[in-house]
Length: 235
Image (cartoon, rainbow, N blue to C red; front, side, top):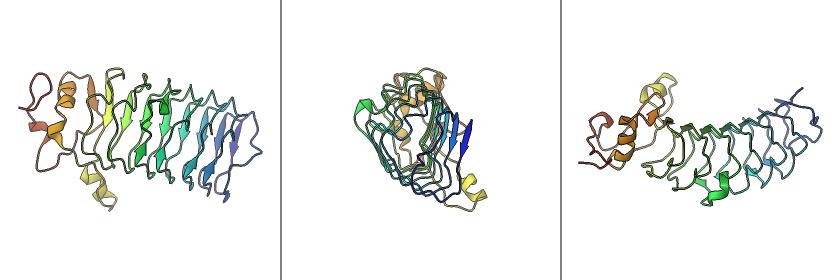
């Protein structure tokens, strides 16, 4: 059973969602907060659409009880931080879409993503991230794709995806020509490629690959001409 309430002007999550719903779509509303335990009766739900709202607060254990959820769409909201407990209980989640929010911080607690054992796709593009602390993704052992373009990142730690399976796919930059097509300012990270020799080494061994495009380097540097040693150190 599917439960749809899009374009209703809702300012809060409705309380009459049937427990039999396997897909819930509350997108294109004006919801601001996801309270604790609000979806606890939706144990059969596999898809939850919350995109295009005004969500700025997700309380701890907001999705508790949703053990079957595989796709969570939170893109195009006003989320500014990812906090501990926000995704508690989502043990079956495979797709977490957080694109086009205001995320500048991911909680430094390693337990932030503890329950996301099944996560394979993590979308963080077009946020405000300036740094991703080593250890952030330690518990995401199944993570296979990560999207990072459109942030304010300049570098990535070699320990960022140390526990992820290979071959690992990463999207770091969005080509300028895409922005030109849509007549919008270019959104791209300003990568200091001299600090990414570890990544160059993994790419050469095809243990990490870029999804579509390599990093766009700053200071006139060019990823293709970056020369690194055998152990991922800049010559």
